[in-house]
Length: 67
Image (cartoon, rainbow, N blue to C red; front, side, top):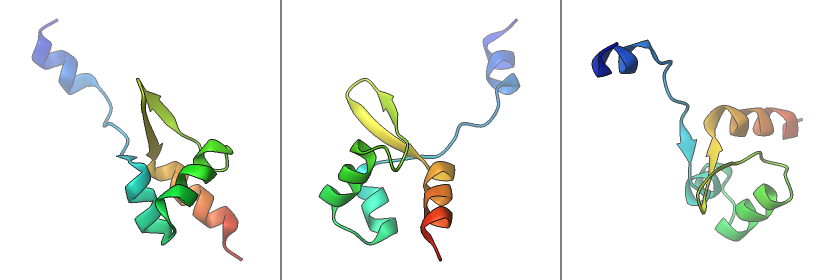
């Protein structure tokens, strides 16, 4: 299988957000966004030392917190 065929066969990558981007979307401080991630209220993806949030997971968090 050629390299170009491998890339074509993969599913699209999920959108991953930084803590700063999460804070801006939620309109909270960056430290509060990281606190929500640390407490596990917003699920995270760890890539080495970096922490990212899947956009779909953030949308689910928002939907569950909305009255």
